[in-house]
Length: 483
Ligand SMILES: C=C(O[C@H]1C=CC=C(C(=O)O)[C@@H]1O)C(=O)O
Image 1 (cartoon, rainbow, N blue to C red):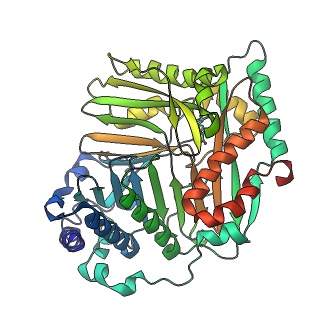
Image 2 (image 1 turned 90 degrees about the vertical axis):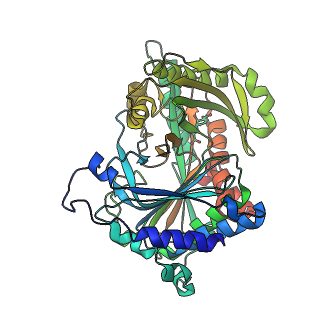
Image 3 (image 1 turned 120 degrees about the vertical axis):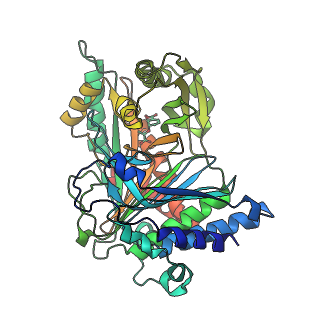
């Protein structure tokens, strides 16, 4: 029943409201005029739900079908840790008031770009409501794929040449970038600067990558990546609650303008489609009812040492730097900032320190301005920002790309912006895992290597079957022999 309701709804709405915007418009920013052409409607599926679980199953099936059948160039999925799931199909565009993706990493100057969906679906498994918005823009053709036939035709689900992620981890080669020796040198350089008198640097965040490759001969197919996305979405819907947020950004081969990897190379059609996925525990902020809620998440230990973290001076200090930064910045837009006491955030694979900070928002401040104000925090760049950039750049540790950038959506007066940690990039015949860590004056290279390995392992566990994880774990956590 849900499937039919969704398919009918999409089929009806996908044909509506097209081509009302000048296709020659070159502006990076969608004007109010464009935004006003959007149609939106709500469909309540609650009435259809006799029993919650069969209903979720059907919702999961339907979303899976839609993702697979969609011929859109880009698909984005964002899920809150407890309540919401957003799916967007369309293509990258200028800033839009309802839907945004911002990228920037380790750059004080925030580069942002946004996402204009052909169809935005916000499916709230708890409330079982589904909302679709159709934006009439010059790419509206892409949403025609949501025809009844396409969504019901089984043949649209068949793909050849699937390259499953598991193959990479089991049969592929692993390259660690950098290897342990270079990683340790960078950390020595950073701690040297922090500990030298007369320098203002308190903290800098560095990261490493584990790149799995099958020799680059085969590329991912759009079908394989869509299968993978739909599996994750299905698991997400059925689980309802999760300790992490989920972000999935898929781009088909024809997109040229973005660089999800941060290697400075634009994505080209010959690279094939690409997918960036993040299972992040950190939100930059969420906004509800005119109030902003931020997480100062920093300071980490393995789960078994979790209790001691709350008394550990190095980690408390690391977390305080992030909280003070957010607190200061929020005071410029809020006159009632409230800061909670530090507490433990226990995840299944790691324990962090967390300080929650909230405040009302003065009028007339856009979500983009708030992102520019807060991102990147010292949890993903360092403090002070400019000096962190200089020092990271000075030792070759400055990374750019989607990892540790921010992505989010604003929707119906609420916004959520996530920090793209615990992430993986599927691109050009390779899967790259990212793991980062905040470096303080007392940081030790070996424990930072292990911490970043732990974070990458957590991503791995989300994307391949449990049985395979152990076989590749040893590779990722390899120390000096991993070079
Ligand atoms: C930079 C990352 O984590 C940040 C968030 C939480 C704890 C962190 C830490 O303890 O170093 C990092 O600041 C990452 O996961 O790649």
